[in-house]
Image (cartoon, rainbow, N blue to C red; front, side, top):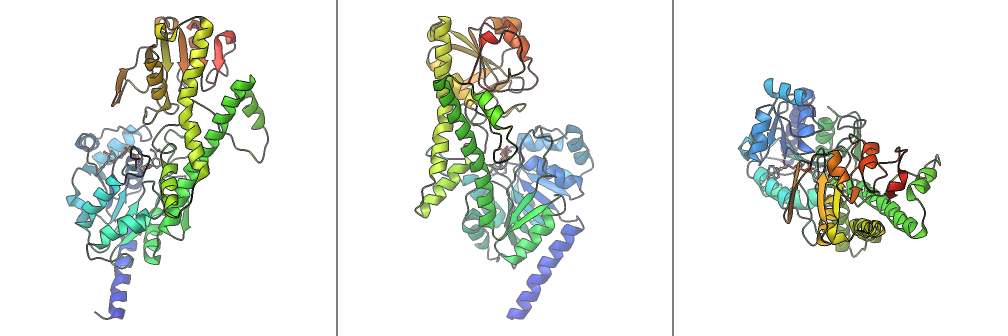
Length: 447
Ligand SMILES: NC(=O)c1ccc[n+]([C@@H]2O[C@H](COP(=O)([O-])OP(=O)(O)OC[C@H]3O[C@@H](n4cnc5c(N)ncnc54)[C@H](O)[C@@H]3O)[C@@H](O)[C@H]2O)c1
């Protein structure tokens, strides 16, 4: 084919896909139906796209096909209806790839033990797609990662198929910004970033994301989109570290950090509210900044803020332990003879997600001191870590009163903290969950 014929063919491939997207006839595939992938799949199916999830966990795939939901941000009935209507299904094989027009990758991007990026899930999935890639498909990475992953890791694997990006297929990065549990900002009304390195991919990706998202923010490359996302999470990690450090300083100075912060946040400009706690958890804040830290080293650059924030935030469970031991000492209870009730092991309020949860580290540390630690979490009936497995206890008067110390590590909103304080011998509140408790304040120590 001549160069002109090739270019015409490429234009036709692109225009055909865009037309299918605009008509909502494009078949959308979502790889990884977790916290990010499942809400995304539901959102796309709701506007009319036929959606197939590729989920390696066959139990999860089977649950979807029975219309059963397992992600809190998804409405049970909405999912069930979409499955009944045949607009959403799940499979555990990549053999469906040729049937798909758009493939969105939402698999985990964890860290290795040495805090370096672990792209094994992304690479595995990309190889599976590459083996079945056909002209006219858009591949979009939603997983959070370091700048350069889409162009430097995914693109070469896909192009090894013999097809060319921007000509035969299209490649973009559109990082997911979902904030699990946030009722005000959801996938639909949160501005969506899109970056692609070649103009054709940018156009196709923009057409796709504009179908369901109120506002799409286009940046000039996939790497820019990747950096925006990791910067956003770094911004949070650094600011949380700043208030955590302030909490430790206030402890030394005998000041109440919550009073100081509440007063600081009355300033209507130049400050943003962040609150201290027992550390950071979840799949984003403790992990994503280290992706950037690692990548920066490649250009001989040290990201000091990231290193420092990580150090301070990782220190918080140890600080909580140390302050808890001080409280026990004041109560005249030896740690090794103490019974401690930890309230909340989820990393975040009103969620059942305990990945990287600092509360679990607090449990670990206090158990190491010989304390008899039990926990209650209305959202986490059981947690399983490689070294520790525990079950939530029923929150009874007996449980609360039987503990020498109750430590509030997650501020779930469906717990009656006044009732807890009333029945507890003593409470150590790391979240200021007892801020509205009027009585028995003499029994409370704040972080
Ligand atoms: N959870 C969040 O709040 C959040 C927010 C924004 C971005 N992110 C990013 O989104 C990505 C996904 O995170 P998540 O929280 O949805 O993870 P998750 O663990 O909840 O879901 C990932 C899903 O992918 C599946 N999976 C793993 N390997 C697979 C494979 N080879 N083939 C098919 N399915 C596979 C898993 O079984 C799981 O169901 C990560 O990069 C994360 O950093 C997460």
